[in-house]
Amino acid sequence: MQNKNLLIALVIGAVVILGLGWKVLSGSSISTGSGNEPVSLTTNPNPLQMGPATFIIDVKDKDGKPVDNATVYFDLNMTAMNMGAQQGNATSQGNGRYAASGQMSMRGPWKVTTKITMPDGSVVNKDFTVNVP
Ligand SMILES: [Cu+2]
Image 1 (cartoon, rainbow, N blue to C red):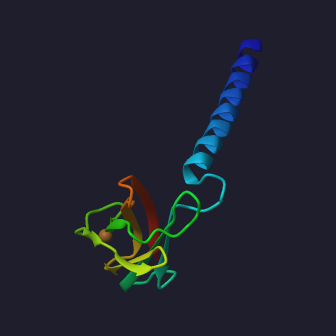
Image 2 (cartoon, protein in one colour; image 1 turned 180 degrees about the horizontal axis):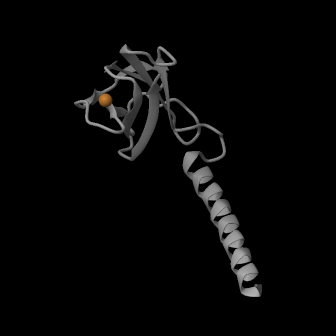
């Protein structure tokens, strides 16, 4: 009985420590205090629907300033099956915004993989899951 309680206490302690560690890690990787995501995604239409879609990717630096001279590689496919990847470099729209187009040929979850090469050569990888309801 006592051993069991001890075990439960240890598990709870481990979960709390892991949770805090995760918070700290994700907090520092997302931004340096400005609250800005370095890479964010919106879609048009939103929510998505079957047919053509535009993916709008906003890129910011550590200070939250828009980054214009990045190379934004984009890859679109379903999460659970290969629909034939749609990929290429997104087109700069100015003000840190990049656009790529895709065809949503099936309902369900799709994965957007981005690889951003910043002007200083550093690379940021960010994946998103979007859904076609
Ligand atoms: Cu599919």
